[in-house]
Image 1 (cartoon, rainbow, N blue to C red):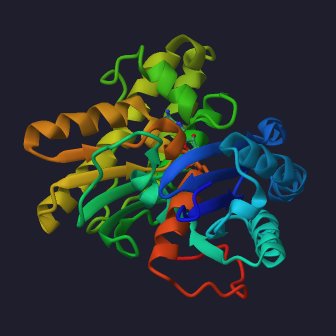
Image 2: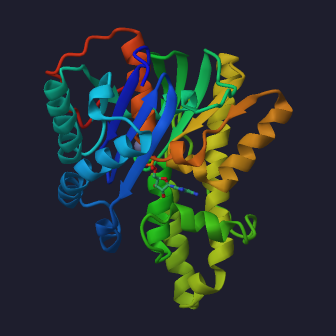
Image 3: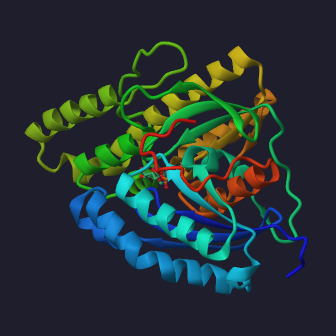
Amino acid sequence: MHQSSIIILGIESSCDDTAAAVISNGKVLANIIANQEVHKKYGGVVPELASRAHQQNIVPVVDAALKKAGISKNDITAVAYTNGPGLLGSLLVGSSFAKTLSIGLDIPAIAVNHMQGHILAHFIKELDEEKEMPEFPFLCLTVSGGHTQIVKVDDFFKMKVIGETIDDAAGEAFDKVAKMLQLPYPGGPLVDKYAKEGNPDRFSFPHPKVDGLNFSFSGLKTSILYFLQKELKSNPEFITENIKDICAGIQKTIVDILMEKLLTAVEETNIKQIAIAGGVSANSGLRTALQSLTKKDIKVFIPKFEYCTDNAAMIAITGYYSYLENHDFSKNSIPNARMKL
Ligand code: KG4
Ligand code: ZN
């Protein structure tokens, strides 16, 4: 390894994925992730089980990342880890591991904000890749199981939330509605799968009235619940017989709600570059809606799927820019479950 390379080991453990990645001068050498199957039967993430699984996974995952990258631990310049937001028990596993490693190797430990990581995932490069990246300022729609935000990004670490959900996140809405449809957790990808074959205009659901650039999804959840209860009364097979059209209608409503606010944000800020981040950016309906914005002269950036959902490459790239900007790398920073941008 060249002496001049800045090699960052990234560690992500904020929710139910244990992940480690190695980035050298901004380029990915390894990006490893261990999903936790243990939560499936509970219909959601069980925090205590998540932190136990992180403890079992963290060493093998980091080891696999170093092997894949072809480096030894002594080649690492700094270790970056997710410090929040997330589940406290889960964050503690990754942050304790990262800090211990940094003390052992006498290198900086860089605390990273998970939401910043999702946004800076747009700056991850593959080896031998020169890709177009968003230019500052840009707008980023961050849509995951825990968050729904529109962020104005002025620089790597100068970001401002200009709109966010006042209740459920978009991914949470997908998952909760999927549960009502008796689909397994996480239901978002399944709603998407059925929606692709359904008619989005057969069932329609109301849009919430929320001020400014904020979102709300809890009303939608309730109206779908009442809708299903009513239909099931007259036909107990209603869900199985109409699953594709129901999913298509729900997906269209969620995507329309997101797009309405995003377009308002474009008008208000006059910023014509939109980036998207978080697990829900995998949604085919949202991707199609975003692609159509290019007709309006709006540039759209969608990261590779593996960088949309939780991953450690986004933590490593954020650590890399933080290292370049010479931030304060105190080992005293404590994980913060509700860390803000
Ligand atoms: O960013 P992420 O991996 O984890 C966090 O929540 O931080 O996002 C996971 C969320 C889940 O709610 C999942 O249902 C949703 O992203 N999701 C989708 C799709 N793929 C993942 N929602 C709708 N359509 C999809 N294709
Ligand atoms: Zn996330």
